[in-house]
Length: 374
Image (cartoon, rainbow, N blue to C red; front, side, top):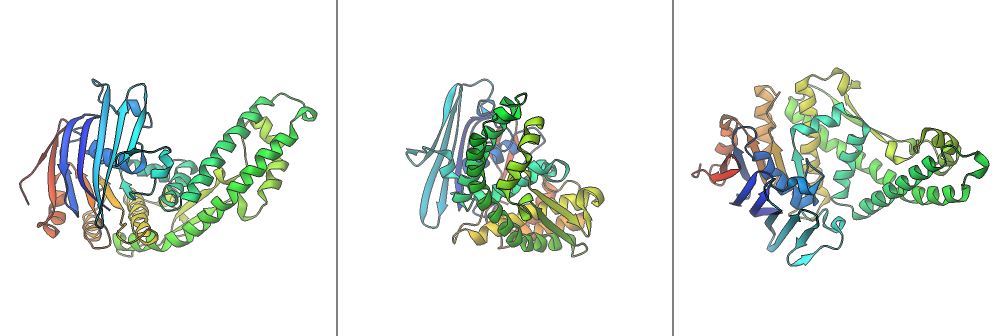
C-alpha cells in the first residue's frame, strides 16, 4: 500500500498543504515544533481513524478554525483508494472511503497497515502493562478483525462489571445480584478465550522477527526476548471471576482477566527496564516496531507492506547503531517510509541510497516545501 498524495487543511498547525510522495523514501526536515510530527500524525490518522497523540478530535483542529480535513490518495497494486476524514467542532467526525461514509470506524482498521516509531514508544518500557497490551492489540487488530471485535466486546463488558462492582460496594453479600454477575462473566469468558489464544500465537510468531531486527541493530552483541504472561495460562477464568467476586467488590474493579496480561521484555536474563542502557532500550523499542512491520508484511496479503513512520529515531543511539538502522530500513524488506529529523546530516546515507526516488520536504511554522530533487 503506497500513499501517493496527502492533502491537509487546518490539521493542528498545518494550515494548508498538498504533498505528492515517493514510493520508497520521504523525509521531513525542520526544527522542533514546526509541524513535522503533525504530518506523520495526519498519515497515522488515515490508517487508525484517530491521532497517535491526542484522542480528543476537536483538539486536532487548528485553534483558529472550526473544521479540519485530512485526505490521502493510496495505490494498492493497480487499485486506487481515497480515504478522507472531516473534523468539525461539536459534530461527529466524518470518515470516508471513496464517496462512502463508514458506519463503524472499526471496519476501516487494517485496510492501510501502518507502523509508527516515535519518542513516545519509551512508554512501552517505562509505563505499566497497559502500554504493552496496547502494543499487542494494535498489531493483531490490523490483520484480525475477529480479534478486534472480541476485544471491543470484552472491554465493554469489563466496564459494565466494574460499574456493577461499585454499585454494590456497600451492600451485604446476600443482596448481590449473583445471576447478573454470572451472565456478565460468562460473556466476558467467551470473548477472553479467543483474545488469549490469539495473543499466545502472536507472541510466538512475532518474537523471531523482533529478535532478527535487534540482532541487526546491535551487531548481535546482546540477546533479547519477550515473554507473554497471562492468568489464563493456569486458571479457568469463569472460576476465577466467581472466586474473586467478593474481593473485587471491596476493591471496586475486576482483578482477573485478559486485561491484566503482561508482556515481559528481557535483555539477557534480566528485565530490560532494570538493566538496559538508554541506547539498549531505544534499540529494543526500534526492534519491536520494525519487527512489527516485517511481521505485518507476512500476515497481510501481497503488496501489503505497512507504511513506516519514523519520527526522530536517531536520538540516544551511537553512530554504529544509527548506521545499521539506516541500512536496515532502506532494504527491500520494508515498504514506503516517512521519516522526520531536525538534522539533515542524519539523512545523508538514506538519501544516497535512494537518490533517484527520495523526496525531502522542509517544514517551517506549519508550511511544507519540497526541496529540489536530491
